[in-house]
Amino acid sequence: MTEKILILDFGSQYTQLIARTVREANVYCEIIPYNKPIHYGPELKGIILGGSPFSVNEENAPVVDVKGMTRQVPVLGICYGAQLTAKLYGGRVEKSDKREYGRAIFSKLKEDVLLQHVSESSQVWMSHSDTIKVLPEGCEILGTTESIPVAAFRHNNNGTHPLYGLQFHPEVYHSAEGKIILKNFLVNICGCTQDWTPAHFITETVEALKAQIGNRKVIMGLSGGVDSTVAATLINKAIGENLYGIFVDNGVLRKNEFEDVLNIYNQLGLHVIGVDARKHFYNKLEGKTDPEEKRKAIGNAFIEVFDQEAHKIEGVELLGQGTIYPDVIESLSVHGPSATIKSHHNVGGLPETMKLGLVEPLRSLFKDEVRKVGLELGIPHEMLYRHPFPGPGLGIRILGEVTEERVRLLQEADAIYINGLKKYNLYTSVWQAGTILLPVKSVGVMGDERTYEFTVALRAVTSVDGMTADWAHLPYDFLANISNEIINNVKGINRVVYDISSKPPATIEWE
Image 1 (cartoon, rainbow, N blue to C red):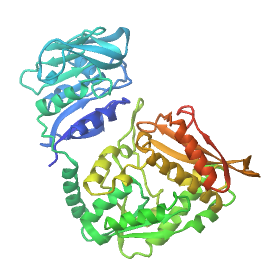
Image 2: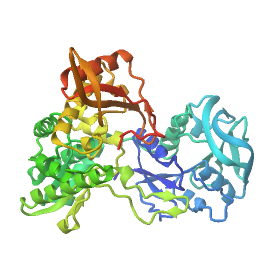
Image 3: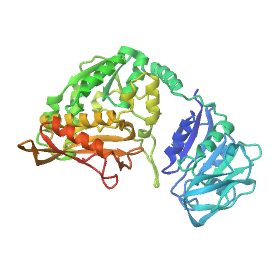
Image 4: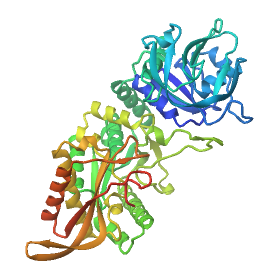
C-alpha cells in the first residue's frame, strides 16, 4: 500500500504548491478540504495544514482538531495552519504591527530535526497579516525573522506525535531552503521512504487497471496530447487490444499532425482508429465568426463523430480519459468547500446516453508527473514536451471564418515558425508558441508585383502554468528570418507581425 501525506486545504493559493513539493520528494500526497473526514489507515504518515485567506480570529474561520491529529500522526502547520495550531493550544494570534509579505531572512535559533541541514540564516517567503504574539505553553521557538519573533516552532506534546508550525511558506520558490525543511518533515519526522517514483506508479497503476477493467473493452478519444497519450499507454499495458483509441482529424490540427501522431501511436503498440472528418468539421464551421460559436461547433462535431465511431465497436463498457489531478481536486473557496468535484473531459464532453463507466489512470498526477511517467513508458520526448495546444486547435487561431484554404495557409506558416524555434534551439525556452491568421489583408510588393494578401501574427510566451504569461523576447535575427521564410514560401501571406502583449491584460490565445 502506497504511503501518503494528507494536505488539508483551507483555501490558500499555495496549497497545490505544497503538494507539488511533496511529490518532488517522491512522496505521495493528497489534498482534501479541511472539513472532510480523515481516514487514519497505516498508509497515512503525516498531515500538513495549509494556508488560508481567513484570519484565525474571524468568526467563521476554518477549524480542525489538531490535538486529535497528533494522537495519530505528525502534523506540520504552515502559515494559517501554524497560527491555528498556536491558538488552539492556548497561544495568542493578533494582527501584525507591520506588513509581512514577501521575502524575509529566517534565523535558526535551535537545532531540530525539522531544520536539519538548514543554514543559520536563509531567505523565506511570508504571506500573512496575522502573527503569533504569544506561543502556548509547551511550545518553543525554533527560528525567527527580523519582523516576527515566531517564524518556526515545535510543540513538546508529551508522548503524542511531533507537532510543528511555520509562519512562512517553505513550498514557495522564494524560500531558498524550504524544500529541505519539507523533506525533513516527510522523511525524518514522518518516516516516509520516498519510493513513489514513475516506475512504482506504473507498476501499481497497471495492476489496479487490470483489476478494474478485467476482460471488458475500453474506448478512448485521443488528441495527440500528453495526457491522453500517457493514459492510453497505461491502459494498453493493462488490457492490450481491448483498448480502442479514436483519433479524429478535425481539420484544424497542425500540419501533418494526423499522420505523425498515428505513426507514433503505432510505434507505441496502441490500437487506434484514425478518422478523417475534416469535411464534416468545415461544414459545421461554415459562416461562423464568433469565437464561442466556433468552439461549440468544433466540440459538438467531435461528439457526433466520436459517438458514430464508438457505435461501430461492439461490447464497449468503459471510457478512458486523460483526467489529471488539478482537474479533480475538490475546490475550496473563501466561502467554503465546493460541493462538487471539478471534472475535465479530454474528449469534449460525451453524451450521457453512452452510459459508459470511467477509467482515469492519471487522476492522481500533476502535469509534470504525467511527463515523467510518459518517459518511463518510452513515449517520445518530443510528444511529451510539446507546447500546449488548444482543444479547438487552429480553429481559434484563425480570426473570423474557418475555411479549408485558411487552415492550409495557417498550417504552412505555423510549421515554419515552430520548426524554426526548434532549429534555433528556442523551442524549450518558450512555454507556448503559435501563429495566428488575421482577418486583415494588406498591400505588399514582391519583385515588380503588388500583392494584397493576409497577415499573420507570431505569438510566443514564457509561463509556469499559463495563468500568467510574459511575451518571449525572441532574437530579432530569428524573427526576421522566420518572417522572410513565411512570406517567401506561403503564397497568400505577405506580412508578419510579432505579438508583444503579456497576460494579463491580453490572453495567450487571441480567441
